[in-house]
Length: 365
Image (cartoon, rainbow, N blue to C red; front, side, top):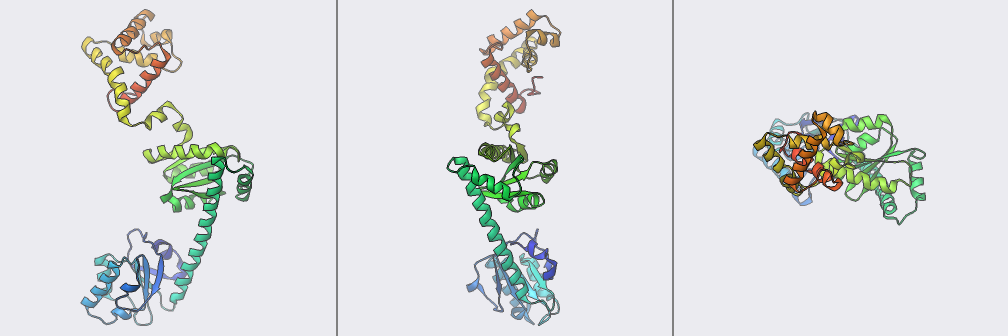
């Protein structure tokens, strides 16, 4: 429960006097008290509610100490009920709350504190029920991926969420995005599961949801399960894509990772530097000394599906000229561009050099 949740409920008639920064403060407990110093009863993140007795007609230094004690005990906010003692929040109280960074809220006259307490309790019960259901689904999915559970319970779960009979987008998110995930998924047919330190969202793979996911700017890894059985590999794929999504700070689909470029992007740069030093630097230095085009010729030759003849035509040189250039590449680097294993090494080196700024482009095309 947060201050934003409280302030967004119009029936409660709670208003912010000193605006909370982002209204993101967590409320773990509501504590009604008229004690001047309730420190012995506070554990942190409380919403303290009062009709104003501790500060009613009190001098500025008393108000200062009252607010300071609440701040010291990490109270989330002070809610003052109007209409009994106070017509509005006292100027000194507003000043001290603003100065000391304590969110100050007011409750409209005639609204009992009980309404706020009951509303928060109801929300807490609902969230506990939802949390238990999400953890249960997460456990089922985890057991299924581990091979200790058959597909039947997964099929039943998908049916219960209206996801049976069609492909399902499996979206993995960092656990701290739990609320944002709900705001996204709750608008569509789908389910949310807690899987250890990750959140999984299972949604029908429609264009509308995919577009909303892209527009959400959430960090996410995405894979597709064609049916319940396919969840066994779609979930690990989504979690793998999430690792790259966290690195890029964006939505990443598994097909973006299942490429040479996707694999290389996840490799620490220090592991790629030797490829550059051995396979790229000698060509750059030789081209600079001799005014040749060994590196450019190699890049054209490494185009997908390219061969000696097509590469030579693209470079406007004779086939034998290109063969001589590739032979010089092999001489300088110790790797043969005509050997398939060495071609892969050259592609890695060119990609790494382009991404680290050693050469202008990592694209051999």
